Length: 65
Length: 429
Image (cartoon, rainbow over all chains, first blue to last red; front, side, top):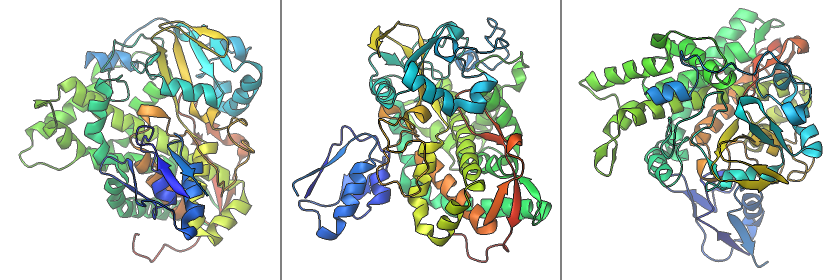
């Protein structure tokens, strides 16, 4: 499972950063920054799904399984 | 500043007669978001309209639309070509031209919008807001000490007036560098702007938000030592090497003051209103404090306070209706948040709702700049209340009064304090 993050769609709601700080950081302007390259560690898959399901702008997706 | 004065429509002008005084009988053809019925039962009105007339029109305010489906609200919020932000509060007055507007960046359209917004973003990022949490915690505890002292166990306190209302006023005053003791004055200005749609009586031009802010800004300019607050920050800010013009500074300070107060007050009050009549939710939050992270987002979804507005810039079809240039469009994010097409069990409060793409802070380029501040205040306010008053109930459900207009929240909220605990001995987090 890999995270797809669309910086153009992100409006800085910061929901991903709150729910999954292991996977998302924020920059100085408050936009999300992906913290993992490549595969999401097994134990963080639930948090990755939460980030997807709580992004109001549909800026986060998951690829693969 | 003449712009802000007339466009915010509260300030001493006498305009065309407002539509109030004529009660609404048909919400699908003649709605009025400033009507007392809307204050009392807006969520029911949105539900009715969503199924019977999802893009409703009223001839009031010179022609205004009310879309209630999530998909329509989202498409308008994302479409800055057809919908302009030069007017964000529906009023009997016509807002000025774009693209800067009277309170940048909320009233600005692209491309100026991004310039004005970028300037402010760093001051409101999650990491910039976090240091304000201990101050906010201490402030909430102080308010609770007073409230508990006055009411006593078994007594009645007004959670909206004595608690929720005070928190954002003091926090934003601290950030802006204006005296917290001016809270009552801010609230009067804000009420005129946000809840009456310009339909208030004429006021003394010296007693307006514009006049107040010009005075405060002059005091900052004349100050020898910088105070490091947001007004100093705006006075020092440069766009392409140029200082911001005075209209921009006054408009932005007005925005920060207005946008941060009624809104957060409403969100805190609504969450406490919910908890007052849901003992099972109080018990769960006390037993599982970590759940507050998700519960706060659910309160924001279910009781989102803010409805924004737009002006139609170019003709567009929406829900089979034709929206004409110059029409007002209300953007009821709270109605979008209760659309069953977008949320499972939309009318239920589910504290650990796992899929919650709520739009309480708007959608698109105008996402609430202060969302991290509001979220922090709401979290601290609810947490501290529950620690100090773990058991409480509505003292008189019929005495709860909700605001009309574009910011919805309880304005009177008498609650009986059934159990009070001692003041917290912990250091403010």
